[in-house]
Every structure is written in structure tokens, then in C-alpha cells.
Image 1 (cartoon, helix red, strand yellow):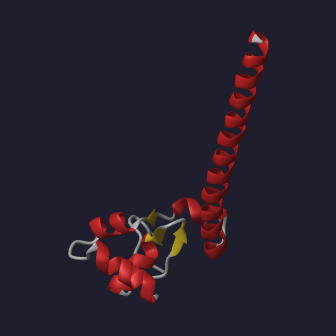
Image 2 (cartoon, rainbow, N blue to C red):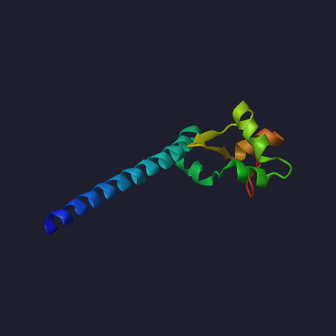
Image 3 (cartoon, rainbow, N blue to C red):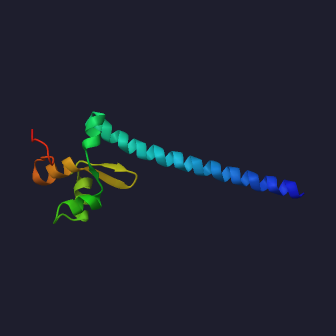
Length: 112
């Protein structure tokens, strides 16, 4: 009786580990798909490393006077190019600057 009880706990433990691994894999796939979207929209992998992707909160902090609410509305209306990763809107810094100021000049780089 005693060894059978230990086997039952062991099976429950293994099943819980299996479910945790499934959750971790699912989360990793979601994060990878968000990164792949950036690559597909932008082109080359080297360009991806140079781009900065912002959340709505980060974008609002970057431009004084632009609220999180307004940035979210611009995303929803299509005025600001963005994509969703889960429930979050992600915006490239370049797209934000173009939408707000009409042009973008990267820091330390030459404007084309």
C-alpha cells in the first residue's frame, strides 16, 4: 500500500511537469512569432538588430505630450503602423517618429 501511494504522487508530479513544459514552449513560440513578424515586415536580420520596438507606454514616454491613450487610438485607427503580440501593441520607433513628425532621422546615422 505504501509504495503504490508514492507511485501515484510521482505520476501527478510528472504530469504537472509535462504541463509546465507545454506552457513554456507555447510562450516561447508566441515570442518568436512576434520577432518573426518584425523580420518579415522589415526584411534583413541585420536591420532587425538596429530597430527598436516600443510598447505603448514606452512610446508615450519617448514623445512628451503624447499620451498612451492617443497612441493606442492611433494604432487602432491605422494612423500608426504597429502589430500585436498577444494583447500588446508593438510599435517601431521609426514608424512612431514618421507618424508624429513626418520623417525619421536615426541617432548617429545619416538621413537618406
